[in-house]
Amino acid sequence: MLSSASNRVLTFTLQFSSSLKFSPKTHIDYRPGSLHSSIMSSASRSSPREALFDDSGCGGPITLEEWQRWGCVSPVPAMVNAVIQDLKLLENNIDAHMVFGGNGGKLQEDKKHRAKYETLADSDKKFQFYSARQIACRLLGSRGYLCQKCWLPMEDCMCSKVKPSSLWHGIKFWVYMHPKDFLRQNNTGKLLWQVFGVQAATLCLYGISEDEEIMWNAFKDAGKAKVWCLYPNHNNAPKTVQDAFSHQSSADMECAYSLTNKDRPLNFVLIDGTWSNSAAMFRRVKEQAKLAWGEEDIPCISLATGASAMHKLRPQPSWDRTCTAAAAINVLAELQLLPECSTHGLDKQAEAVEDALVVLLEVLTTRRLRMGRSITRKVRHSRDIC
Image (cartoon, rainbow, N blue to C red; front, side, top):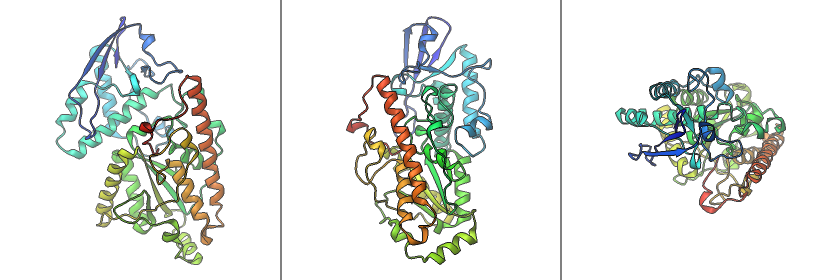
């Protein structure tokens, strides 16, 4: 959405189809009201929200410091800043500010970026542009509105209620997140680096080459035997934690960890996105595995899942599916049951994530009640795993 200094708001709405292509339909809506009435109120997520501006319009490029405050560890993605630069030029050309949000919280797009997308001949470049576009708009629309650590509105910040914990050095989590889940308030993957820190639980954004390069370099360095995906892969029978690790003796596992020290732990990939998006994300993981090791097969672990705290607000479509934080809790709890892992305090580390999950649920519930919204979710809205 673009807003001018006059009493009218000009809205450009462009939605992506499931194939990641731009929709040809552009909706233009003239609505009466001042600029101030178009800025999102802190009490309503569905109203439009203007980005935090300075004299440079849309706020200028994302700096490394700002990027990493959101939980990222990579350099600032070049394509994200390229998108932001294009938005800034668009603002200058039409003498208006970019506004984010709107009905249903959908991104407000523009014709210029649709045209640029259509000029990209390479499908991977289109995919990367799509991801960068999603992330750039979320970053700009969240400036001055969301806490950069917990991704909640400033008045609902939960950071002071989360107790940090150290994750055992033999384990590392990778939160492989879809761009549409980046900066989502009810995302649970973010809790992992809030509790354990960004080096123990690292964010990797799907389709962002800088992030994916860091993750796959770490995997190739560790070796395929130390990379596990927490995903219910129905094409190959996934192993349980007991199947995957109990055959190793305590001495064998301790020797492996001591030889690799802290640089090559067991890497657990948590796919963080809606269930409808997760299949494409898992396919990309398999494609990258083939490039790295010559075969698509990547070991998957099936967890003994159950209802997590977030099921009260976001029910899952089946019992073998749970939120991202709950998946991390389950793998830690199941590893704790193995004699070779029982001395590493994994149960306490799982409890720390569970406590953070409860805090998030309480904050989201309080916010929804304050806004006069239901605290239960209908079945048609229950396809999220993040």
